Length: 414
Ligand SMILES: [Zn+2]
Image (cartoon, rainbow, N blue to C red):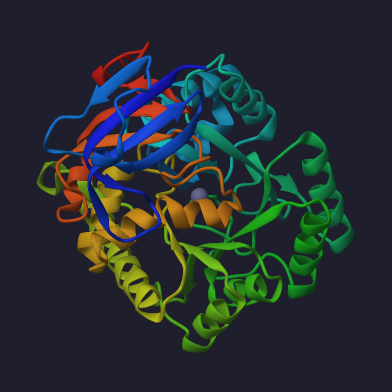
């Protein structure tokens, strides 16, 4: 096994909220063997490679994007594209998205809706080292017949069907179960303001998942969908919008219940269409953009309030949905800090150590002895200026150069 020494001017470990100065990390194969202060280093040990990081750089754990859709087109017409495209087309997009993701410093994605028959072989190919990409945590999604995201989920309409759907997903080999507790905004005929399942049905799903040792994520916009998700003790609530006719809202009692239950909330903050040049758009599209910008503003406020209450936040940007590309995640973390007034260190923890906890994994998400050597080097100090997170210099995935110097694929050039 090759031992590599990295000497870093600054290091953020993903768990403790401070920055180490003049740190070292020793990588042994795919794992981190040790870390400490450079003055502790003896001169006798031989390393296959010594990497001295540039003076104005910071070493941190590879990022975890907790909410993606790897096969989605990111276009205005995600739903129509998903119906029209062949599996081959989707597989090519998945490969492209994985390459882009890795280049931005994301070394793990939790995918919240891509057909398992497409993603499971890719997950396994990446794990086996035969395909470049971040580690993929694959969902098996469940929705009602014709419900939100029916085109990439198993349709189940009763407690018995839900139990069977969970069991079938587990049999296929998925890593967790994604439940569509409410409708959503992108599937025609779906209603984000209505629940799709009763509390009893949601509980049946989480009971089956727990029996199989699988965690659960629940997509919930409408207030009642948040309520049934809490009742079912899902692991994470996605969006958690408390949505009514008036838009994204708030419910003090349910937030207290989320806290008491220790449920994580994946905030799905993204810039989306607000990245577009508004003035260059036709009037009708400007109106649409303004509506979506208002909704994004409401989401930023919601996320701010959840953070104030101490809810365990995890970062995911719904990459793959309209106007959210796989290169966007670091920039969307910047928005989570600047738009929600959340301290950069808390944003970074939500995309590293806390995210790993939500996945139930103590082998990723931090720079610590025994963890996977998933590392990101950025120019600048992201704890004092979060924008540094958008300046990747080097990405290491499971001990191997994945982007930047030494990478077999020069993915940063794309
Ligand atoms: Zn999603």
